[in-house]
Amino acid sequence: SVTAVIVVAAGSGERLGYGMPKALVPLGGESILMHALRGVVAADVARQICVAVPKGDTEMRELIADFTVELVDGGPEVSVVDGGSTRADSVRAALAALEEGTEFVLVHDAARALAPERVFQRVADALAAGAKSVIPAMPVVDTIKTVAATSGAGTEIAPEVVTGTANREQLRAVQTPQGFELATLRRAHGAAADFDDQQSASVTDDAMLVELLGVPVHAVRGASQSLKITTPLDLIIAEGLLEGPLG
Ligand code: C5P
Image (cartoon, rainbow, N blue to C red; front, side, top):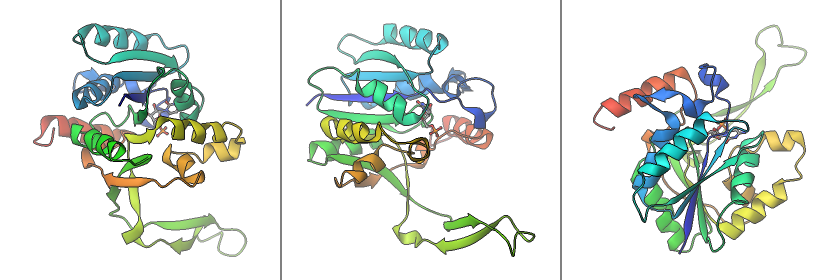
């Protein structure tokens, strides 16, 4: 079966504070994007890799062109599309560019640059076994509560008040690569194309759109190395992973 991997790298990376798109931020002497692409190629699950880059970018396109030259014959095809203003828009742009005959697609955050091969394989194996949708997930260590803004009485004490506590045993922190039957993910993203701004802002992964279709989403074990590099602390952790025994 033919599998493609979409790598979304079109985010601004404001929270990292480098003043450049996050995927270009250096990690161990190379960009986050290059680490992510090398990881995807090493996992050896895809015939096609499609990267969504920021609209107007030239730097990532050049890096990707150089990287493509390095790939051996018989390696994956690499293509590039302009991303959109939300992550889902970037995924939609890449979905439209996949080759005819593609059956499965994995969607991966460039920011999860150190996701290990075994996670890609677990996801691909679940698809091969018949899952239409599969995500890597990790147990949660913190207690997670819902909150609301305080209004009226209590406002002077603190800006938020707790509205509930989820049962941690049932919670998972979800990562990428997330794997899908291509037709299912296209249908899910098609349904989300007309979302209003508020609904669009609440879409933080692909699987939640598949959940809205009522299609079961299966969870396999993720990895702590798959952390999403978002803050300066995450970059320190990622540098440490590259140097240390887990790297
Ligand atoms: O910002 P967020 O944590 O949602 O980003 C997750 C991934 O989605 C990152 O790899 C980022 O580059 C990508 N993204 C994108 N297009 C956007 C926003 C985020 O490709 N408009």
